[in-house]
Structure formats: structure tokens, C-alpha cells
Image (cartoon, rainbow, N blue to C red; front, side, top):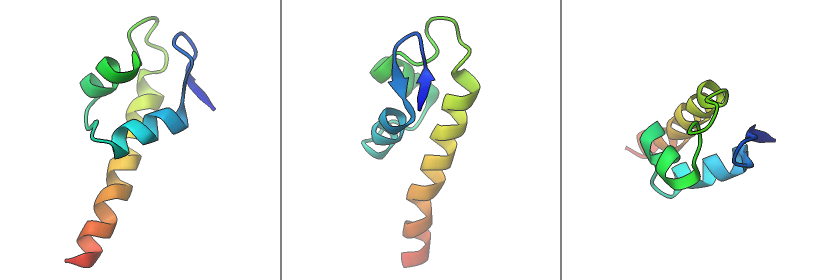
Length: 64
């Protein structure tokens, strides 16, 4: 699904970017251009960022 229509960024691209080290909206803006045009995608992009970071952290906390 497209999250950022202005830059044709999908939810998969955002998840991949987070899995590859992006851990802030600034990182997503620099990497993908998310929320740099009209800004309507910012809330959804932030939600995806946070959700993906939580998913990454859960296996680590389970292993500890």
C-alpha cells in the first residue's frame, strides 16, 4: 500500500528501511523522502516506523 503518494513510497519500503537501520522519521525522510512534500503521510509513516521497531525489539527481548 502506498503511504507517501508524493514520492511513491510503500509500507514495505518503510518496513525494509527500518529493518535496515532507519530508526527515526529523520532517517526515513533522508532515505525515502517520506513527509517531505505535502506531509499527509507523516502520521502513518510514524506509526509504521514505531510498529516495525517494536517488532524488531520483541524477538530480542524474548531471547534475553
